[in-house]
Image (cartoon, rainbow, N blue to C red; front, side, top):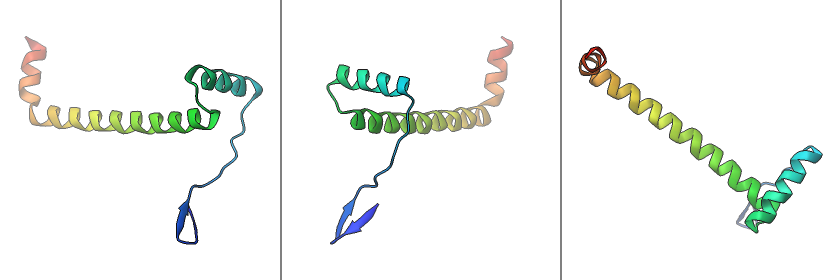
Length: 78
């Protein structure tokens, strides 16, 4: 992030794509009626949200296994 006159500005970056990736991105943007930039931004947000969700599920499963290991063992052996 950059500050300019008390305003927070977003960070600009260059994204290098192959010709095939660019064509795929362009088609996706057209299908969604969005700019290519917006499709990329949403894809980044989705990727991060998916990773965070997966991590929360993994931690919850570990907690359940720890707290209810005996019951789970009995169910497995039933």
